[in-house]
Structures are given as structure tokens and as C-alpha cells.
Amino acid sequence: MLSSIRTNWFSNIRGDLLAGIVVALALIPEAIAFSIIAGVDPKVGLYASFCIAVVIALVGGRAGMISGATGAMALLMVTLVKEHGLEYLLAATLLTGLLQIIAGYLKLGTLMRFVSRSVVTGFVNALAILIFMAQLPELTNVTWHVYAMTAAGLGIIYLFPLIPVIGKILPSPLICIVVLTGIAMYLNMDIRTVGDMGDLPDTLPIFLWPDVPLNLETLMIILPYAIALTVVGLLESMMTATIVDDLTDTKSDRNRECKGQGLANIGSGLLGGMAGCAMIGQSIINIKSGGRTRLSSLASGVFLLLMVLVLDKWLVQIPMAALVAVMIMVAIGTFSWGSIKNLKEHPLSTNIVMVVTVVVVVATHNLAYGVLAGVLLAALFFANKVGQYMLITSDYDEETETRTYSVVGQVFFSSSEKFIESFDFKEAVDNVVIDVSRAHFWDITAVAALDKAVVKFRREGAEVEVLGLNEASATIVDRFGVHDKPDAVERLMAH
Image 1 (tube, rainbow, N blue to C red):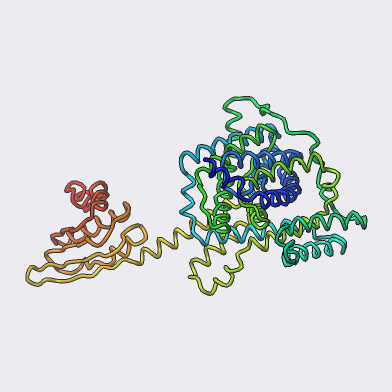
Image 2 (tube, one colour; image 1 turned 120 degrees about the vertical axis):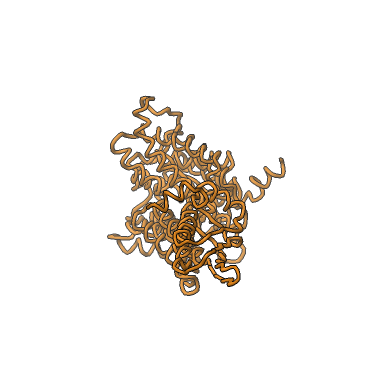
């Protein structure tokens, strides 16, 4: 127990606390921006990021992963806030949390195994592009000072780690923010700052129960939004967990993550915050800044609130250019540059799945749509590929006047047509044996194909015998097949 606590909380104290500060600084402008997207007060996003980061750390979310208010979730809330107001958003947030906990207990996190590597790569690349695109408004119609500050920030981020000793101790994104803020204040530059994005909270969050009628009508209003938020939230969290797993060479418990995200969202809704989920950008900042344990997530939430309440006079002076530089670093670090080189080496189907995932996510700004498109395409390509791995050979025994067809491979919806086309129904033969001892029948389409083959041979006057069905195939054939049921066969042959 004690060793587990030490490993999960206190094995990397300095790295986690420093990373927590950097993440907290990056969370502030994003939380405000996402609040503006959703159409709510900046406090709603800031309280959500504080609450979610703290709760997820305490209830056992993925170590080293950062959760908070996100753009993907904010986009789904716009219509609800516009038509029904903040209270209904808080109610939808609570319901989202409940649905995510249920998903955890139903072990829906294990569904991630159906998401192929090419879909994850496409998702990551699309997110990197969206993160970069989100910085463009800060870099258009601005003075040359902003470009100079952003370039200086990127220079600090990439060159500071090269300095012996100190470059390894202090995270370069934090140095970038501190140095550029100091320069902007000293030179009294007229450029956009965090303070220009909205008012910061000046009080601690308080317990709030959504002021909505507890009836079926309210449920019908919030349920569609809660389901959408649940799906997108868990998808982004599971994807982020996969990426953090790769970055840290550790494994996460996806179902536990579902429950943790649910509890965090319930906590957020009760403290006046909006629904959130894991954040790929912030998680990468955290890992690259040295954060590894739950302490980094807790620290980011606590530092976020402390900064907003105590250091607000300094925070509002942070130039947006400094945070743009940090987010550009995140976009560059998030993008899988190896995937471009792999376009030449990987199969065409893999490349198509990856590119379609990127295009759909970037075009719709909805991560769920992109992942869904990628998963469906990958499934179709897989079904098509497996459908090719079926071979039917035939052999004729003149003594017994028997034609034996040997089926090898998988028979299912994709290969059923090829299965039927492999038989010669016009051949004048008395006996036909269909040997399926090296085949497997997967679905009712495969069973229907077998029925069709047997019935066609019988129409031509041949005696047909099916041999070698394995136990699983025999079960589905017995249940849905009609070729061995005389009444059913007569009806089938009548058509």
C-alpha cells in the first residue's frame, strides 16, 4: 500500500511540481477560450479545469495524464447553452459523469482494442493540426512584435534544454512564459495578454446544484447532449491514455479511467464547471516537462486555482504570444512525423484510414466523427482482406462418381459471394461432398450461402453431404441453416 502510494504520488516530486506549474499556465488561456466557445463565463471553464484535474488525480485516473475543459467538449455545448442556459449545462455535466461511470462498470473502455493503430495516428495528427489552427487567430492581423515574441518563445523552448545542467532541471516552456512576460512588461509592449481574453475568478468555487426542474422533460433536453459529451469525452480520454502509454512505456486501466472521468465531471458540475476530459496537448506538455505521477495532475489543478486567485495581477500580463509558442511546440510534438515517411512503406488501406481520420476530424472539428470514420473504414478493409483468404478446391472420384469440394478459410458476409461462385452447379454429378473441416462459418450470411449451395446442387439432382463443421460453425448452422430441414428446403426450392 505504502509503496504504491509512493510510486503513484511521490516518486518524482520535483519533476511533477514543475510540470504542474507549466500545465497550469497552459490551462488558463485554454480554459478561458473554451468557455468563450461554449458561450459561458470564463469562470466556468477555469473552475472545471481545476476541479477535474484535482478529482481525477485523487480517484485514480491515468498517472501523468492531464484532464480539464477541452475544445472538443466545448463545441458540443454551444446549442444547449444558447437554447437553455448555464443551469442545463451543469445538469448535462452531472449526467455525463454518471454515464461515464456506468461505461466504466460496463467495461466499455476495452472497446479501444477495436481502434486500429492507423486511426490513432490519424487522430493524433488531426489534433496536432487543430491545436496549431487554434493559434492562428493570435497570429493574424497583429503587429510584428507578436511574431518576434512567438519566434523568441520557440527559440527558448527548443534551445534552453541544450544548456548544461540547468537546461535539464527547469522545463523550457516555463522559462519561455516567464522570460517573455518579463520582456513584455519591461518594454511595455502593446500586445494581447491573458487578461484580454476575459475576467478571471476572484473567489473559490462553491457547491451548486443545477437550478432545473427534476422531471422527464429536463432529462429529454439534456440526455442527447450528455450522450454526445460522454462518447467524445471517453474517446479523447482513451486516445490520450494510449499516447501517454507510448510516451512513458507504461500501461493504463481504461475502465478505471472511465470511472475517474465520470467522478471528475460530477465534481465539476457540482462546483459550477462544465464537462471535460483528458487533454492530449496538456498531457504531452506535462510528460515533456517531467510530470510522471498523479501529483503532476493534482499540482496543475491546485496551481491553476492559486494562480488565478493570488497571482492574477501577474497572470493577466502573460503575453498570448508566449502561450502560442508553447502550444505550437505541443502541435509539433503531437504530430506523428514518422507517419509521413510511412506513407511510402505502409499498405494503401492503412494510409487511407489514417488520412480519412485526419480529414474528417479537421473538417468537422469533431474527434468522434473522425474516429468513427476511421474505425468503419478499417473494419471494411479488414473484412475485405480476410474475405480474400478463402480457397475452394475440388476433386472428382470416378469410382463413386463423387465431386468433393474442400473449403479452406473464413466464410462470412465478405466472402460468401466468392464461396457460392466457386461451385460448378451445372456439372452432371450424382454425389457432392462439401468438406468444411478447414473452414469457419461466422455469420448468417455464411450460413445462407451454404444453404444456397446445397439447395442448388439438389435442384440439379445431386446428393449433397456437408462434412467437418467445427463446433462453433455447427452451432450457427444448426440454428439458422435450412438445408438439413426438409420443410424449409421445400419452401426455399419453391422460390
